[in-house]
Amino acid sequence: MLPATIGGITEVLFLIGFVTVFGTLLAFSLYISGLEHLSATETGIASSSEPIMSAVASYIFLGLVLTLTQYVGGALIILAVILVATRREQKVQLGAG
Image 1: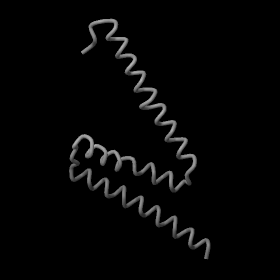
Image 2 (image 1 turned 90 degrees about the vertical axis):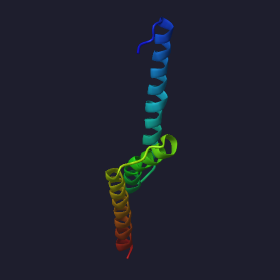
Image 3 (image 1 turned 120 degrees about the vertical axis):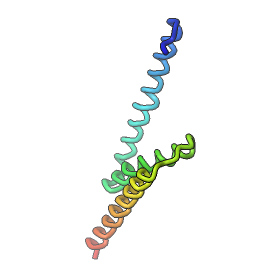
Image 4 (image 1 turned 30 degrees about the vertical axis):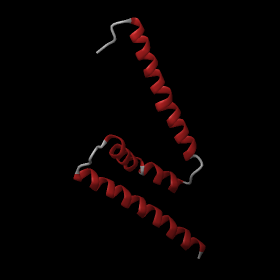
């Protein structure tokens, strides 16, 4: 439903701009600048954990309960992150020895 007055439209446009700048542009810029200080493996792990953290936050703040398929998907993501991390450690140990 659209606002009936010009003042209402101005408020809606302000809120859209606020969410765009602070909720998207600023947050994404800080995320990218943080990733620049990590290795490729750490960046991959951080990026892969986003869906898991989103699901946890949704459960905590919104009470959202996942389906079995979503739990299986989350488990596969966690398994992939573990495999990547352990594979990286094995390569480092082989190179050092």
